[in-house]
Amino acid sequence: YKDLMLEITWILTNITSSEDKEVIDYILQEKFGVMAYLSEMIQHDDEKLKEHAIWCFANLMEGNSERIRQSLETPLFDTLSSICLTEKVKLGTVRTAAWALSNLMRYTEKTKEFIRDSIEMLSTMLFIADKEVAADTTHGFKYLLEIEEKTEELQRFKLETVAEVSVISKLLE
Image (cartoon, rainbow, N blue to C red; front, side, top):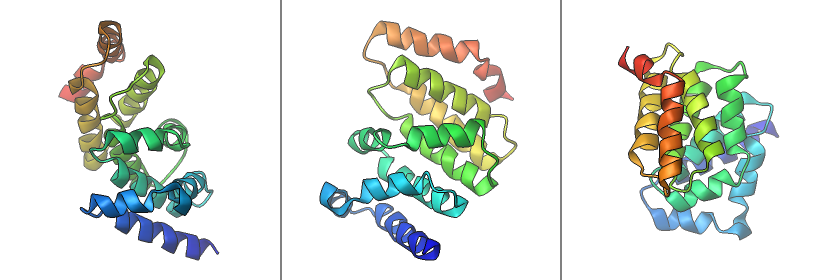
């Protein structure tokens, strides 16, 4: 059964990597249950299943605010936080999580909590000695910082939080 779930998740990962956005929008209709299925898989005990589901979410979110919003309605953010901050997982899973987190930083409807938690995760990932993780984490900070927030207060909060965690010096290393 687990092998079948992995194959299904792999198929969804391939579909969501497509350039054809109409196909992706079609399969994401609620009647097909793709988001519900992926939500289950990112919480699965099997690390391969979890990684492929995260990969699928990363594909979905790439440059699409509506799909980022939909993804944030799932347990994705909590799963990424767990991988970044607590779980002992394989490097491949960490790399996939870093890429997904990077894509999440393109979201334009951020809250203080989202900003704070995202900066904490990105900062933690900066200390992982891997070029791919470092590249995606750096992109995540770039996306986070280049988007102007809706209020001046939120923009100031974001910049102050980045300064507080001493990210700049780590990025310059």
